[in-house]
Every structure is written in C-alpha cells, then in structure tokens.
Length: 502
Image 1 (cartoon, rainbow, N blue to C red):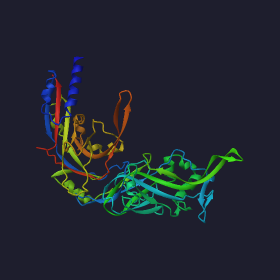
Image 2: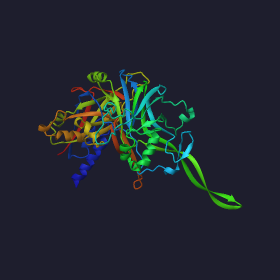
Image 3: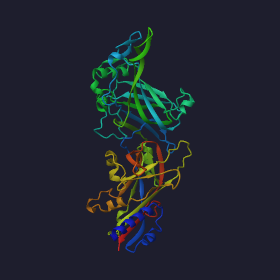
Image 4: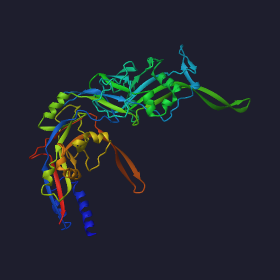
C-alpha cells in the first residue's frame, strides 16, 4: 500500500509541474517527496522542416467561396464548395387540394402545383478580406450525388470529375459581402446573419426531359408524384436534390466562410380556420378561408455532405517548403511542419526508466507582413505521427493525449505552441520493433485544425465540462512561420523527465 500511495503522489506532482515552462527545479523538488524515487531530466534538440500538405480531407462543417491573394507570397487561393440539403423525416407538403398556383394569366388558382419562386441562401458568420469587393459565383446543380461511400479531399473538383449536370439548373450571382440593400442598423444587429441569395426562377428541365416553371415547381411536383423520396436525407439527395456546386467565377479580394446553406421553395396554400360571429343576435361558428404564401426550407446539415475544393499556387508553396530559415504552417491545404523525435537518444541509458513527462515547445516567428489583411496564425495545432495524417481524419478521431495532441495559440502569453506532455507518444515510438520501423516511425507532423466542442452541465457535481466532438482540418486562411528546428542548438526543445524506483 505504501508503494501505491507513493506512485499516486509522484504522478500528481509531475502532472502539476509539467504545466510549467521550465524543468530546472523539477528534479530536486520531486526528490524531496521521497527517497524511494530517482528523477532525472534532459533536454533534446528537435529538427524540423516544411512539407506540402497537397490536399486534406474536406469534411469541415464550413464551406468556402471566393478568391484572395496571399499578402505574404502574392499567390492566389480560390475556394469553391459543394453543398447538399436534407429534409425532415417523412416530410409532408400541404394537401395538394389546398395549393394555389398561378395560371397562364398570372392569377392564383386552386389545385395548381407550381411554386412562386425558389432560391438558395448561403449564410456566412465570418469572412476574410475586403467585404466591399464585388465578387461573382455560379451555382450549378449536381448531376450525380456525392455519397458518403468514399472520402473527398480538398483537391476533388466535382466539375472536373463530371458530377455537375451540364444542362441542369444554373444561376450566377454578383455580390458583395456587405448587403447595401439593407439599412445599416439591420446589418449591425446581433440577430442578423448575412447571406448571399441566388434565385432559381427560370424555367427548369429535369434529367428526364420534363419541363417546369422553375426549380421550386420541380421539387413540389416530385413530392406529389413520389412522396417516398422525402422520407429522409438519403432518399431526398439521391432522388430529388443531389446538391449544388458553388464556383467562384469572378472577383478578387475576399473569401466567405459559409456556415449554413438553405434551399427555399415558396408557394401559396389555403388555410381554414374558425371564428365566432353573430348572426341574428346569436353566436355562431363560421369557417374562414385565407390564401397565404408559405415557404419550405431544406437545410445543409451534418446529415449530408459539404465539401470544399481548394486551388493553391503549388509553385509558390514549393518555394516556401524549400526555405531553410524557418518552417511554415499555411492553410487551407497548404504547408505542414514535420519534426523528428530523437527517440533512441531519449531512451539511451534509460531503457528501464519511466518517461514521466516530455514537454515540446515550438516557438513561433512574428509575421513580417504589414498588410491589414495578413493571415492570422492558426489557433489550434494537432500533433500526430506522420503515418497517421490520413487515417486520423478519415476515421473521425479526436485527440487522445496518448498519440495525438492539440495545442492552442493566442495573441497573449508565450509566442509558442506548447505540448505539455507527449510522453505517451515517445513511449509508443520507443516500443516499436526495430525490425518493423518505417522511414516515418519517429516523425510527427503539426497540422492546423478546427476543434468542435460541446459543454455539459452536471447537476451532481455542479460543474460544466467541455468535450471535444470533432477535429477537422482547418480550411480557413491562416499562415505562420515557426522557428527552424535543427539537430544541434535547436530553438525547438523537448524537455524530458525520467523516473525510476530505487
């Protein structure tokens, strides 16, 4: 029992001290706990280099549309995206007899199935660049559904792959990210989320050659002919609306971060309601009919796919990768930083010791660009083994603090990305059979990510806990330089604490 208490006390002390930026006094302070434990410390140089990201798994909940010029390099970056839409389970439109459509004379007539109008809305909660710049996009109906039976990377272009319907619904939109059609007090309201509207009111012909007054009428008629297609998200996207591809076709200067997409179908219907009236002095119930415009909205949600296609200037990225003065982190789908952990040096002479703590500090270099549109530094960096770059995201993993870790950076505090304890990863690498070591067995990569979390409140403890629910590649516009790691006198250090029982 004494040994168990000793181990618990030792572990708790290490957990506390590992949060400190220095390890100078850790050995002596821990030794004061007990004479039964020997503690040693060491510091190791970590070499690093830049590597091309090429393309990354595009499973972000945000879509990106626009074209910008990187103030740091002058290179162009273009974002296009594909969005699908879902419907509620077993969704039902109003009874067909209650619909009112416009006849040839433009008057509302009972029983006519046609939509007043149809539109797509792209909501954005954030953007990069100059919001006053005029941009142009083209929305194109998908000809084939991009189902979830495969992974889609940021280099995947639905248009190039022939998945966009050539004679399908198409519309162009010239826009700016500030909607001057709205009063300023509306735009400045906290309840207002800006959006780009694309109208689809032109005549539409479906893939079977049937003609409709507009795309919304196609959706309505499809429902009354095949209500089973509106059973769930899968049947809806595979039989009714396979999605739309949004491509930047003009303008330069901003990139909108699309948080929500919406397909709206407007139509008129009859509503019946009862009112109390007085007839000959007696109260009677009278049925009233009213015709009003309704709208059905189909949203892009996590149940369906949203993928972003990124076009980068590869020749410019290759020049940055070759730069030996520093390493780079650039998103979207730009450059990662690779490091080599000297595992054999770390464990030499400590084969029987426990690696209790291994703190990695990666200094960041300040941006030298004076542009007001300089890219921000990545807020969160995932550290994973190089061989896990693809599998981590494809398997929807989250950081486990054993073989994957996330560090944060803010404008305040230490200008570094700090991983307080990657001892578990070092131990995993240490235990790799030498005969089975690949060329990447001790290499790690820093990858900018966006982390989704949820908070839960416990009535039992009275505390709120935050749980990570998703880790995805950061597809926003970020860039930073890191200090270049070398095999000797490196600015990147791994500080290790060893322990053994006497």
